[in-house]
Length: 190
Image (cartoon, rainbow, N blue to C red):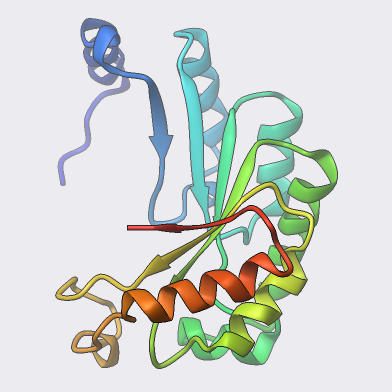
């Protein structure tokens, strides 16, 4: 993908302001870029609301953005129960070093009452009623939790997930009931 100059982006946003409700900064992982606060500041100066999508592995950046009011909402992907073993299995990498940082970001959002949602994409080979229950216990007190079903035929990094069939609607509704027992503000998306 070509690099687009920030001035060109700002011009586009200004020209299309009446059609744009807000900006979503997503990735890869946007919090690994040290200039993220500068980008958010420029967008806030243009009076746009900003939502950040993150995996939660950079609590220092998240705290900076929240404390300095550089974002309006944060969506954190919770891929598995927040233990190094289960997170490592879900991500295909050693999560030993990142799990504490993810937990720190989770606690930051819950404790500050900052506008947020946690979300989990449910994958048949990874998630069960028990794993959803474990996730909910780790994020208890959050403002909103969203369960998303695996999308069929979407290209995945790990080829093992390429041919999986998503959960049925009754299965998703069962996950929803399990989650709502612990996190009442849980919803299905997609």
